[in-house]
Length: 123
Image 1 (tube, rainbow, N blue to C red):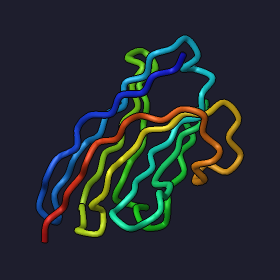
Image 2 (cartoon, rainbow, N blue to C red; image 1 turned 120 degrees about the vertical axis):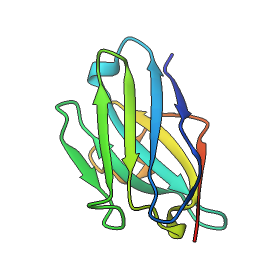
Image 3 (cartoon, rainbow, N blue to C red; image 1 turned 135 degrees about the horizontal axis):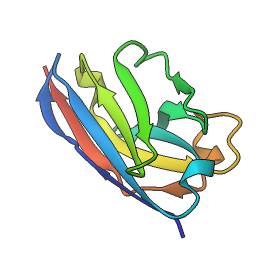
Image 4 (cartoon, rainbow, N blue to C red; image 1 turned 30 degrees about the vertical axis):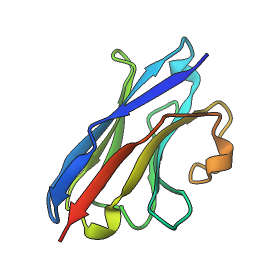
């Protein structure tokens, strides 16, 4: 069983920063491809950032240069550092993990999901 628990969401003004965390439980952390997704009200869930087993990261164009994904294998935790936040970043953010991911920004590629953490950016 794989469990993902997000934390770190909150409210911030535009230009501010937040760091999201995703605690992972399960024995296969090292074999997983992991990602962050978000869903704004009335919109479909979209990929934000992903990181492969070797630590290579990929990002959606909308967050490149502002968000950084990383993972701490010793702590079994995935992070998303979000800087220069904009009101359009407001959404529920989800952590996801998958065993065989070929298209990191597609939610259908992932097997496990967290419950989400809310991020609200005010102008």
